Image 1 (cartoon, rainbow, N blue to C red):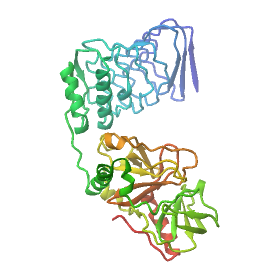
Image 2 (image 1 turned 135 degrees about the horizontal axis):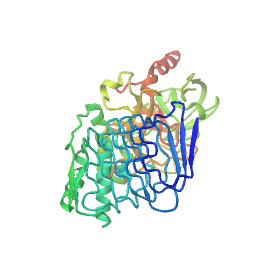
Image 3 (image 1 turned 90 degrees about the horizontal axis):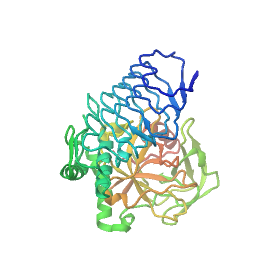
Image 4 (image 1 turned 90 degrees about the vertical axis):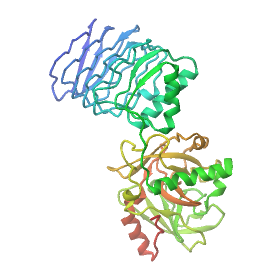
Length: 434
């Protein structure tokens, strides 16, 4: 059910306290109003709100304040919004991202997310604060039990610091209330320099995540390779199990390679590995529901296969589950991306974001660590099935075959029973990471 509101010239408190029909899925605002102050204050709104704003400055202060049932992300062009004070105040069920909000002309952010206790705070880390009014634009910005997850708060501090360095950040600003937000060591210096600059930041302090030895090993192995080999860091890795021919793939036993279903190698396909060895595909086992398959080769390869995570992986990687990510920026273990079967570009790096429990899919985000960020993963058409691996010393640990342009793929540890069944049929086993 969609409702449309038109011809209104002032939306101040129009829907305050209104109980909307539960079957309403979208509410479209099509009017010349410039003022939306407390438009839906305390209403039962839980529908997608879209709007056509006039070409003039817009006041969105308190627009969704106390809409405690709101879970649907609005679709608003906020380019000309001059105030977003209390825009989402006490939206207790707010779980959507606000990355879509444009803040180039916004002067007032007071109480914007106060009381948004279900929100992870994803969005403000990308905003432009050039127009923020000094000195009180961020009073109670977060608070009332709300805050940004560390991964987003770290990025918020880095982004605001970059605006400071560019000379576009207004100052002084006091207080800058960030509620329950906690930063990690990677953002400490940004925060300290912002405070020295005149931003009186109030937050919940620094947090240290207790990484497992496995997570530390994966990070240390990549960082050591970069430290000792620089731009040639890939020379520190045994890449022999990586398939370089079309259809891509990774060797996980002397006679089996892992691929994705939607780009599976046909029987008779010649597989060529990193060092030039070749073999021919004689059979392909396809997973009945996941985008995953295993090819059997016509001979055993004299190559050390990639390792796999065992199905008991959660005990060794306790922070990998999600969403959202449990890794503060800089703490996530990196993944090596061999994206390009024809090897026209070198491997790159992404950080693990999380493994989605509902779909057994691995997600990533760009590396925060400056040394790793110099080698971003580049993905293009034809890369499907490429190796996405953790690193243990010089050895690859296959996390998933590349499935999408976003770098995702089926988390192999959750498919070990099926994988082991296929391998046992061929009288073979995979080498577990642990």
